[in-house]
Image 1 (tube, rainbow, N blue to C red):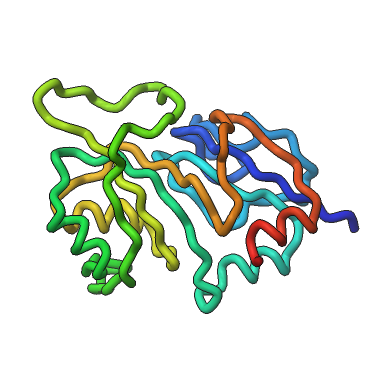
Image 2 (cartoon, rainbow, N blue to C red):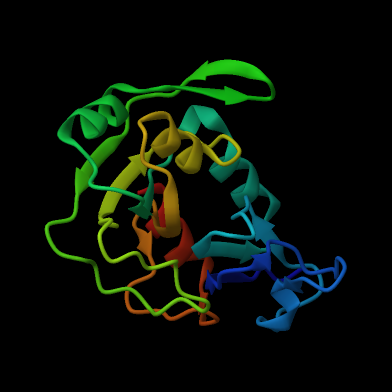
Length: 195
């Protein structure tokens, strides 16, 4: 069996699956890959950014096993003038609800972007409100619970407006645009993720 590795920029409002579900857009609407290739992990329908597609089951296991604690970098636009106190709370870890139970997150690397990062336009754009700031935070996690980033920013009082996964390990979006796909060799993929 030949192994395939792709880095893709999953667009906003696309399900992280290939099979159709109702009238929502899915990965096969954007990416033409061999039938046995599937996404590693997931990105919510309302999130965008870096997603790995492969048919390498050992890569899937290594990347999703919590004991490996791979870095995942998110660029998060939040609602309101985020405070240093909120950033400190994210750095120390916050309590969110996972499967109906309280869960204490690990501390994250969290910083406010000095300038708005260069990101593609989103369609549709976030709701713009003239008098309410919508700054960006760089958030680096080493764990991945369902909707964790959104739950963390909400827990500190600043709901997520836009969420882009920018990097996994050393593999990043770079200047990719939504819907772009890059094929990588096994060596390139493993080097970016595990070294």
